Image 1 (cartoon, rainbow, N blue to C red):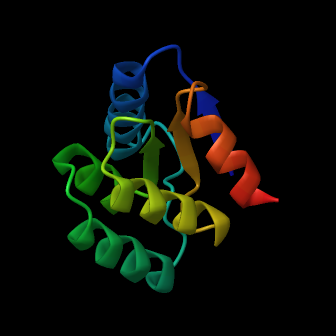
Image 2: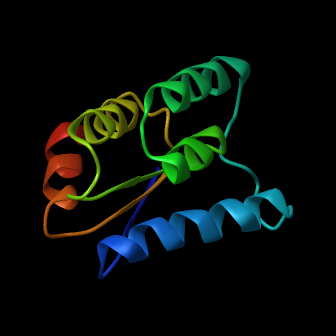
Length: 104
């Protein structure tokens, strides 16, 4: 699992989408390792409000920052805690603390 700290909330989204695009181009090994993980991520993507987050989750990537809806943040925290997300970008002002606490 990889947590990438970004300097802005917008940067968390842009970085996640950049990683997603690179993984689709075959430059990375991919972030979904089995059908169970794929099903869990697709179900979560159907529940979140943020459209970019929906797209990222379907690729095994998440992002987390203070401007996300509370239910979207909780979904990302839960997926990270259960190791369903292989890569998560975060903004230190809010998200980093929540992700780190949940991961312990």
